[in-house]
Amino acid sequence: QVQLVESGGGLVQAGGSLRLSCAASGRTLSNYAMGWFRQAPGKGPEFVAAISSSGGITDYADSLKGRFTISRDNAKNTVYLQMNSLKPEDTGIYCCAADRRGWLEITRDPSVYDLWGQGIQVTVSS
Image 1 (cartoon, one colour):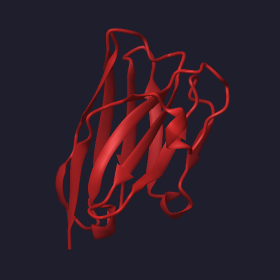
Image 2 (image 1 turned 135 degrees about the vertical axis):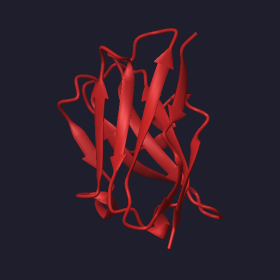
Image 3 (image 1 turned 30 degrees about the horizontal axis):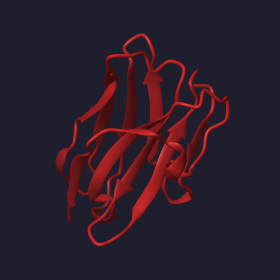
């Protein structure tokens, strides 16, 4: 059974960078579109970024374009989220998720993603 495990979170000062990784065990991710979502304290889930199975199509939340970059290495069965110029409002729990429909499109809709990691804390201090 495939599992997703996030790593790379932690505490960083505003303006700093972090790279999150989402590794899969048990099955290849190469056929699945992948997404990153986050949840800030007291708020609902928020779409961050998504990437197609091949990596050729990406999408970002409008407010994050230019600061965050999603990528994947299917040979390593891993998806990444590079986060630069971090702000205190980027604080939250970040989760990766897989869309196992096998479609070529990618989506911002969290209900479409049917496999989720446990999430990892990112804290940005001012």
